[in-house]
Image (cartoon, rainbow, N blue to C red; front, side, top):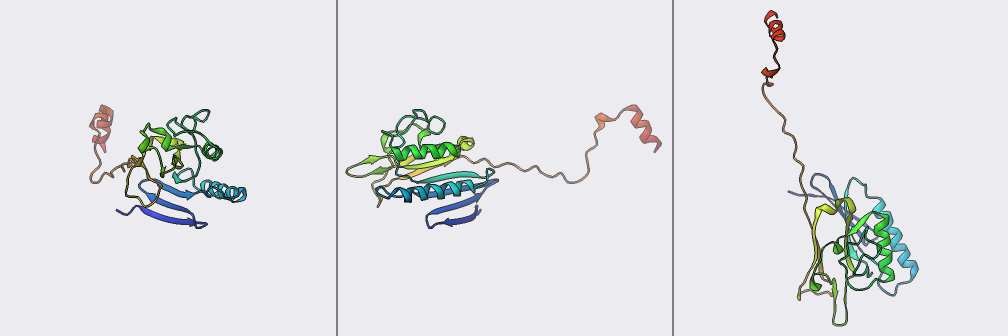
Length: 201
């Protein structure tokens, strides 16, 4: 069964995948400007991302994933509306922007929803650094669909970024079957008066 309905590309980086099961499922992937870019480039990125997210109808499921180059910190510390308390190390300025973005669009950072050991939490691992800068988001009211979010540790990757996955439980709505053939007679509703009336006709 082919569930892919639509693929969209925006500004060469923002990409979307709409996949229909019963409702429309929207996914977005993004990479933020790398460390060292000037503030104008970063501002342009956030404006574009805000525009894309605003363009997704609330009737669609929305999932966003990307390398955001931000550290949101280990604890929720005042951000429990988007951060569930299972992050990694300290919070930095770029991470604060990410938390504010999540709050504005009523998103939850799925990485923080499940307690994990370090090798299932660290998304970027090099000889000099271990960090948590790649994130997956979903709308807060779809949080129940997400049953897990973790890094798949592997030595075979050609990049220092590690594979981050979100496991979703998607329940299909059953369609009511149309009844065919003769309509049922409700004998229990038959009274004496109705029986006499039927007998006269």
